[in-house]
Image (spheres, rainbow, N blue to C red):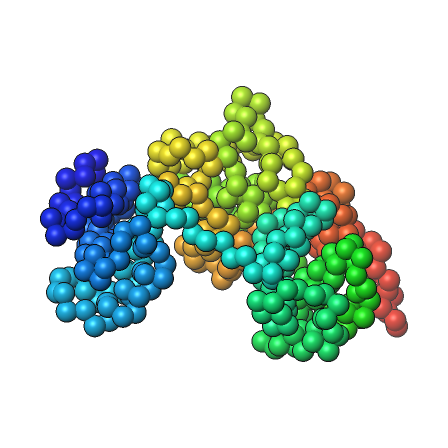
Length: 416
């Protein structure tokens, strides 16, 4: 699929300057590896939209999300233009999203405007504080911004943010509204953490925040109440035994599972792994984008290295990106995220017939195996790259051998 001739010729009914835009979209879809039928469908939607825009008097340079929404809402639902793509709204939205990307890349239309309300400006300052002062990861910052945005927007809307006008009762009502559907204490705790983080930021600006912080309290959450869930040795062997079963992206799946099982990598760390992070001659792997935002050097076990090498040699698509793991489906030049890693590990559980869904179980399993092998909690903390030893203490409850030696006899029975 290396020729633009596989897609229909741009109709003459599309006039300049829209015709070069359709041609550019055609090349864009082919270069990114979309399936031939998807290319044809997306191209048809784009031609339909461009023809409608011209007939409606829209200059191609004025096309944006508003015009696309008008096409989808007003025209597509009642379209009598004919053609096979007339009524598929979801597919049309996806196609026109790619068309907007092409138009902005070519400079035909203006970049997407960035919201600049007073609330947005306040959130940008808070985000900068979280990144530069507190060193929080992007995903953590994004979750906190969503929560704080709701508080500020409910109070100020598009008016200037006057922090002194924020009252404890307003914070209490906002917290109750945001946690109304929370069934787990950790979910409500995340809201408290985000709001308190924002109030601490405002304290550095000289504002009085004690009354607002006093409104919030963390719900009871007994984190150490249950044993960490892990795979047994038999289940782990069952999982590893199915890594060679033929399936879509079999080698990528095997490499991801090996990274989690053998190295204890988090999903985000697996997704961020690049070709430059692996030193094949020395047999080491360097993590740059970790949760603690510190560089970590790990030994590369032979099974993990073999699995990654097999994926790189036989399955990884050609790409200019340096990330190890790429998408299998179009657009295949796009890097993956942690969600795809978690999905891949869930699918590996399913193929092995295991009733699990959480990818983090493989990290817990690695800790349990280290304990069974006689490793200390400090050694486990180092391998799992915990910033605090307190994070690792949860695994002490799995150390049955040492716990048995300090157990007190049950009242009324002799110690065994």
